[in-house]
Image 1 (cartoon, helix red, strand yellow):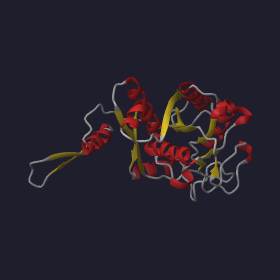
Image 2 (cartoon, rainbow, N blue to C red):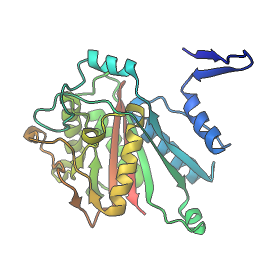
Image 3 (tube, one colour):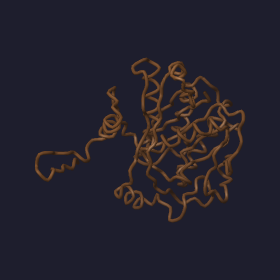
Image 4 (cartoon, one colour):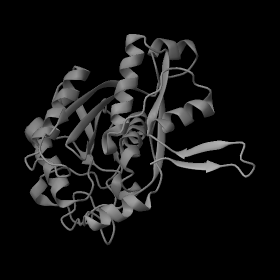
Length: 283
């Protein structure tokens, strides 16, 4: 519900908390951006949704450039909700670890500027990366749990590959959703094996280091992926002590040089079975 605050003199009425659209509106007002505004309420996949939509709008010529990303301030309500659902770890978040016991929440904001490559070059700016496409799917299964076989996640991954026009063998790293929960990590591993088979690329989650920032999570992942492409180095999966061998994944545990890195798949899945896979490529 909206919270209204009247100024001391009664002359001003502010809406401090309102519908989700306020986030895009605030960024636009702060930066003087008068183009189309859109806020996605797709939880942990929202950053991917936003970046995919922005890339499409730029490609179609709907806008000449776009500022797109995600933000998630700390919320006591979210903290209590996840704690009551027993999804929180009492220790560190350990994605893909045999002893993983849940997530740790984080807060974050991450944004990228998207424009056509020729336009960026004309301005004297070197593009950092390219958005190859976005794959989406729905589980149609459970309000909070993923399908155990990872089939919904796999469908989004395949759609992402198709959108980018590339094959599975061209992906050099998967920036995984990797929340550190038993079921989600296992389902994601099954999805990866379904799509990539025995050629599953190296995998890592940033949530061990940065926590799960919910609505900002996939935007944060996109920034990490861009940096990986620029430096041709795969970031490590923090807090991994004993890899879960049953997942059969090549989890990156230390920064790993990747001179041939060209494509990254960044995955995010949200409550309700909203699955997303954003494809980012080297510029």
